[in-house]
Image 1: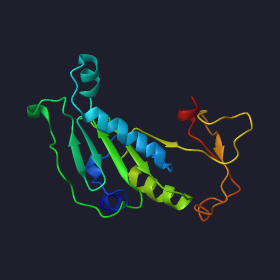
Image 2: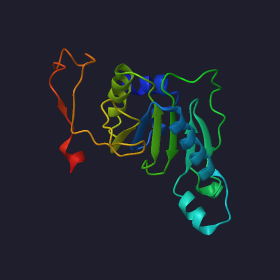
Image 3: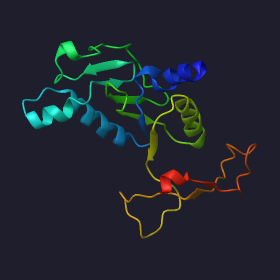
Length: 184
């Protein structure tokens, strides 16, 4: 567990303590860019009472280098974190993570895992130690049908692998069924 916590910091550029219970993985930078815009907007002060109530649910936004931006809609006495410059980073880590935090940990973490099954396996092995409530991959998979369009929700019912990542444990010709809880 300790090794995984250290590896999370190495791969994502943020401390494991910032990870939230709901995790989004992607390999598309435009998803990350939109998440950053939304999260940064949530941290800005507003006088609109409806927006204020919605924004008050989130306490802070954390970027690689542990750069923390606190929610300006929460009185400073109620803040658990404060604006911190974080460690200056010259370049993004291999799989940068961004955290839209809630006080109870039920916020959203988004990680750009890059491309390839080895990155996906590495990061999910380490994230699993945190026991998140749910994680979801945003992006696309091979074998989409002609009837599907960009933005369609696709839920795989099994996976055929030819990447040899788990070859020693399970032959690639054996499909991996998705969790029945997700299918329900």
